[in-house]
Image (cartoon, rainbow, N blue to C red; front, side, top):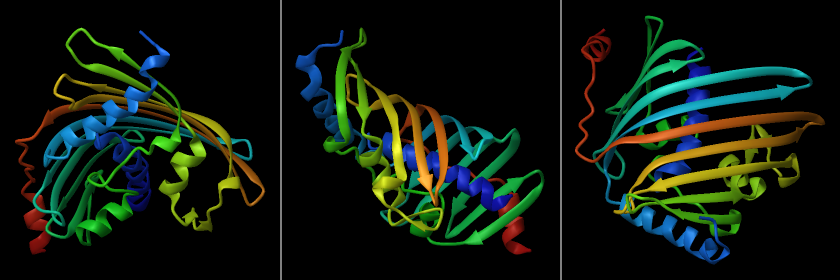
Length: 250
């Protein structure tokens, strides 16, 4: 169960890595990406944040479907380029879970069962599928885009992305241990929406993804819905429960 929870966290962090870096009119198409780049620049100096994340995935393989829901509030505090403190609390698959990372250890409290695993910062984020601090949205992934001006001086950025271009780098060299190739992705759609304030900080993001894979002759479909809201940017100090110290001493 511990590994399965980490896998689900990995899906969320992989998608969060795209989110964390920061009236329809064709004349806005070029400026949508430019505004996104400005948001990345504005977010680059943010070394801590609190974010609320809701994620729903529904997958189907050989006619068998499985749905997973996750709702978490996550706090992240970067101490340096290589060190971070993180906490996340909420529900995964209807089960309450508390998740922590500090001082080279990842901890989780699941139904009273507590686990700890030693790893450095890079290993921790590799295990959870990506990094919250190194992220990008490549212009060549964009099939179409638009911008809407908001009454508060901010913007809504709408992107339709090429699923092969976006997902290929996320999988790297393999998917589920199988060497990855672009022909594994048999089609799909990816829609992303970013709300940015007048200061170009991202305040909210939404992702709707429907992708079909063909892996070892089996067709697998996956629907993913993500809703992320930044509650606080900066001035976040991650706190930990006393049981982590007791667990370390045991």
